[in-house]
Image (cartoon, rainbow, N blue to C red; front, side, top):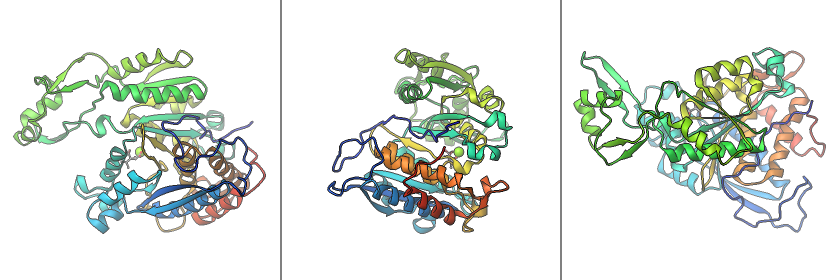
Length: 443
Ligand code: IPM
Ligand code: MG
């Protein structure tokens, strides 16, 4: 059966190349010698743990795939995460954010590690990542999960459950409980310490991510499943500036009970316009009217988590909020065999996209040449396709990854008997050999 990585969702949130535009090509033929090279600036954020190893491999692959398509890159490497904290005292130095904002695209390795786990919240590597996403305004996070026939035996699910799975999680990335206010610590009337966060979405945030998801579903198999917890959560809609009607909510009660918090948040005066509505579901349903060709279904997140391991083939495109998307995309990754295989693209309405593997910094194997670089290499393919509109160069990388797997090369996370166990660098070298291969990969 033919299988592809399906990174090729023909959906762009923003126009492609700004330099030396050339007519679109539909073949993989090398550009003629006369074509002036296209130039793009890429900000590389290697980060922590295995980040630097996988970024150095992916950079070489990106360079070669680009050069074969008449593209030149200028790379600027900037500190990010724990490494940046050690160097500058901040997990996202201003210079790093500025360099990212100015680039044509940003490729990130991974951030975080035990060393910084006890940092104060605002100095944690994870906080730097959230600030980067916010600073780049990349609200749409695309996380494809495809089970490749070559890796079906690496899945922890039974072969007949895993094979043929090809889904896309569209995760809202700059809102919800990750960013919602009020948030903080306090004490309740019994003197117990408590922490609280707010899951909050405004209509415009839901509408725009829903539109991205409908566009993607329309170009895939035409099915969109919106995942929420509308049987329990309101996801309140706030308009700031009116009289305080947070009264009665846990957050407000928490604020009232803690004078410290009350001071912190006393500026917040919110009016909830539509308290009883389950806003996410309501808005996604409303946006669906513009996409009659897409079949919309709704699922509660607990059920979705169960269905993903029960019968994952039922899913085509999933759209969900920030926190459910974080959880479900990790779960979906395991169906494919390894989290080390999954790339992601984070896009906004304008400006550079942010491309990163969904795995973390894996400090336990950092610096040992054991990491799987394929998720970062495939993130580079997404960068070419979604970030720069360079579909041919992206296709070269996707083909090369499949080719390398067909030849039996495997890092430890996807190894099975009969294959060749390689480290991060060797895997990268094998992909490089295949990038230049004139023979299309057997899929
Ligand atoms: C992810 C990660 C991040 C997130 C962490 C590192 C902040 O888990 O990209 O999925 O929760 O978004
Ligand atoms: Mg995650």
